[in-house]
Image (cartoon, rainbow, N blue to C red; front, side):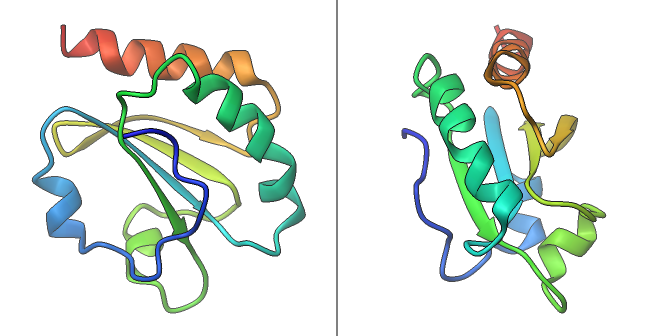
Length: 111
């Protein structure tokens, strides 16, 4: 699965996320968010060398339980998950290399 370009129409349940096996990246944001728009080329560049890592882009906001369960406060927030547990996060990333490093660590953690 490559990087996802569009926000999921429905967010997955936390229990689904918690039961995933292997690496997963959740991206919380909103389509109208300037910070989110600015980060998209950086995220795409980082994922270009990690196309095998699943990526779920979730539109976040008031009343959205998944974002609250991860205590997301600023967008975009990238949550790096391995076997259902958060291993790291980046909030408002402004460097593709930082994202790429987190992806590489996420992948190597399972090797």
